[in-house]
Length: 397
Image 1 (cartoon, rainbow, N blue to C red):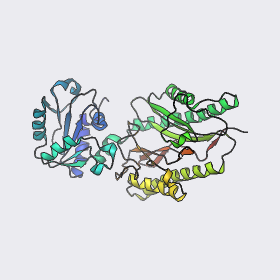
Image 2 (image 1 turned 30 degrees about the vertical axis):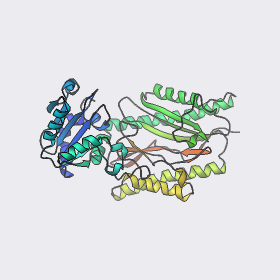
Image 3 (image 1 turned 135 degrees about the vertical axis):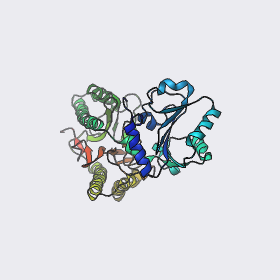
Image 4 (image 1 turned 90 degrees about the vertical axis):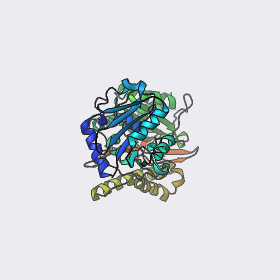
């Protein structure tokens, strides 16, 4: 990253304004071995092997406190710097660094409600509490300054979405043609083709996929052993695929097709429950935007989950409705989740996330539909622009 946000005076000023607005004395970023993606991105960190702290005070100059052997990893840091060596020295200087500050934001989640925001070890938190510091969650700061997409990242995501969509459709056709030719393809072979095609199309990072026929797709994170199952006539096929341009933001989609001329009634019933749950979430997002009301991730999850529950499949919707998407496929911003966690963070302008309800009946059937949403100034933008309304029927007879 050439100009990481917290290494620029203007970026620091933006964060400091937010800190003052939230009644915080500062933001204390903690990093060790790249366990916390937030400071890694906002500070533009390369390889580090020792504990580091960066204090962005609500007023005044930022300070980095780093280990004595890691000066080269911080040569780009333009503000004040403290150095420590031993643990006693670290604790003493950390106490001095936060002295006089009452309330600091850190990557913590009260009650462990949001695991994707819980990056500060209990020992470090305990040490700060001993210094008399109240630790507040940095959740809204992370959303606003780490997970918000830049204009370039949004453009990359849109282009990625087209590539991912077109690759999915081509993969279904490839499976169908293999059946017609008398040499059906396996889940593993089709997975390899998808990854190769995504890479050849320019998506070089965070590239992978899930290819699973009906019963196997009931495991939402299915990965075949070896070649996996052969995709035969009559099989329901789930393809989940994702990828990003170098250093940018991925597109992540799930599509459904059947190797038959029509969809049987039961599969159609399951599909309609999933599709309608997806569309209910999207409609809710549009309505909230038009009304100007704030919306929390857990609210969207509740709306989507209610549809599947009403259709009688509630116990089979076993994951959250959607995950944050930033420079990580599963990002640090708000998730659409009131099942796995209680994500009360607001959807702030500029964040992106997936909407992907699913129904998974063990050893029987798995159905998911996934689109992505950018929470933009003009309202929720869904990618891809044309998303699936019916299961693809891929054989004529």
